[in-house]
Each structure stands twice: as C-alpha cells, then as structure tokens.
Image 1 (cartoon, rainbow, N blue to C red):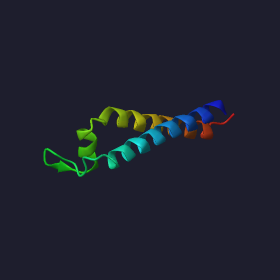
Image 2: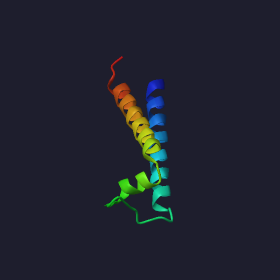
Image 3: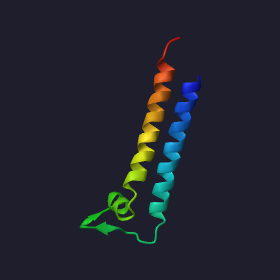
Length: 76
C-alpha cells in the first residue's frame, strides 16, 4: 500500500510539473516560436531551454505510474 501511494505521489508531482512547464510555455511573451525553421511546442521548449526539466517531469510521472500499476497488480 505504501508503494502504491508513493507511485501516485510521484505521478502527481511529475504530471503537475509538466503541466506547469507547458503553462509557462504557453503564457510566455515570445510566442509563436520559430527556432532554426522549426516551430511548435518543441521549438518553444528548446527556445526557453526547458528540455531537461520537462524530461525529468515526464520521467518522474512515468516511473510513478509504473510503480503504482506494478503495486496494484502484485499479489500478496
């Protein structure tokens, strides 16, 4: 049960972090972004140098989700 809650907390933190980063990307004054001929969300992430924080949030969310699903399916 504790691992399940830990997984849910990790997923929530990673998901909320990614949502906040995307929100800051959308609300930035430099939109629309065109970096080296590439436009869209990825070029905005590259322009604001948010690749590492976004990757960490996504990795945290995926690890938390995997832990919660793994703990749900475990038999005791």
